[in-house]
Length: 398
Image (cartoon, rainbow, N blue to C red):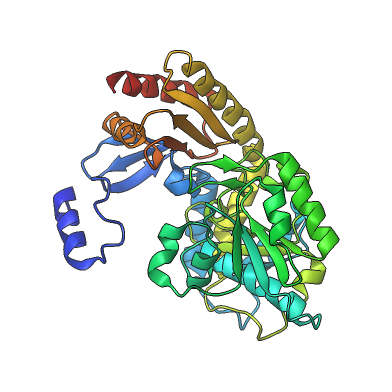
């Protein structure tokens, strides 16, 4: 089927939640290259919005999924699931958590974290501790509770009245955070690098102060690692970059390498708050999704992909800094690992995204001033060099 036929079907039958999409439909991929229905090759520096950590056609992931599909897809959580247990063990081995629950996506994982925090204090006979503080310009998902947790009015306005129990404070403003905390505060939920609003990292000082405040006030620290986790920021989990230990953290995106999966990971005392019947799900942690998660973790271990993310990410970031000498419109580069935002002084990000697409490169844009870079974690320095050459060409054209 050709592209125009696909677009026509989409317009006729699919709910218009994504508007006019980028006019391309991909059929297959290999490494960091995608091939569309017309046979054109594109180099992917957006990774399916930070999902395709292993790129495309990774032999370990492909082999594991093929074998699993031939054996078993679903049994439900009424029975034990071997891959579920093995993946939970793997995540515990690499993190500060003691227990894991699997969901189907990042929003579900964040919903689970919110429920767990509330249940923790409910079962400690402190039901008044039920409110959660999040940050302005955050993004935690599109369910009703996660929309309320998200600190961006544009996502919230159509769904008023919002789910109660959330406060929002500015990023990196510790005084504002302290003032927001009261006897009702159960948890503080943060992204250590805010992605959807333009790649805004938390300062290390703020993160340390935040963690200390949570301990002092008996408040749970929830870190939303849906986008920053699984090697994206140069370590298995972003909290490692800040030398803090969350009570709860969530995962999704890169965990399944393209297969939908989410996870909420927690310290033992907190995790014990969930008793049978308190939470659950039909599909979460099924044989196929957890098989994908296992294959991703094994690739991380064998190929040192978190380390590659840090090393190539630092290299790419420095390339952008050097590029700013020739292109004064680049005013700074934000982020860490392979989660980077190139910030421009002029509203050219969307035009630049289009110019890169015309040159067969895929990147993201946040608003008019930030180009968002989220490539698969398998990229090399050579890939970074090629990308920067094309980016320079696109900038010159503008």
